[in-house]
Length: 270
Image (cartoon, rainbow, N blue to C red; front, side):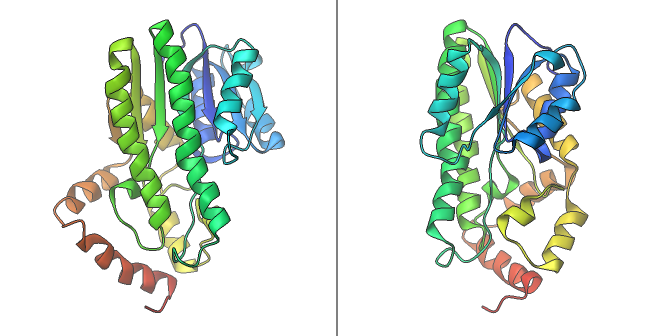
């Protein structure tokens, strides 16, 4: 587990799921935490669950990171409070399921703003601060889906592909200034993702739950990767095997193979 330093750990999307587990594990290790999310009650519930020395000093900031300029505003708020963020965990993200041409454009844009634009702004702004101090750590939450072109998850998978690519490039840029950057790639996780993505299929949701990891295990994998200064880590042994096997198949063939399986699972017609 990462040992606390002189500053704060900021966790986005901390009101539930993987973000909540990041917060709990970091608090247990003694970090002071800045929890960011949209739901005041759930953020406060997370803070009541804290243990460790930093629990009493931790704070919650209410923010919708899918809004335009939200990442910039969050950075400005932390700066105004004098909060020196030593560890940034970009966990906030969302997904959408459906045919790309039929999904509501406003929801797609909000998802991409959250998954890509806010994450990029936060990495750049807090990364600049860390670089000036000569130390800091950034952990971005990607997805195993970022390694595939997935029908019905086209925009979501594309956004997570960006997260990994951006994280690796940022790591190379900041490494010499004492800032470590890692990315964790979970597969199915037992969270509310299926609900928020609009997945109604009982068969799909059953498959997701059966093959999903606990959020706590994903958080541990991410923090372990950052602690060991790994560029990225795939969470879960089965997911590691799946990623290796997918590399043996031409990228253009993967979506063609995945579509009939998803059609069957969600009872869609071609």
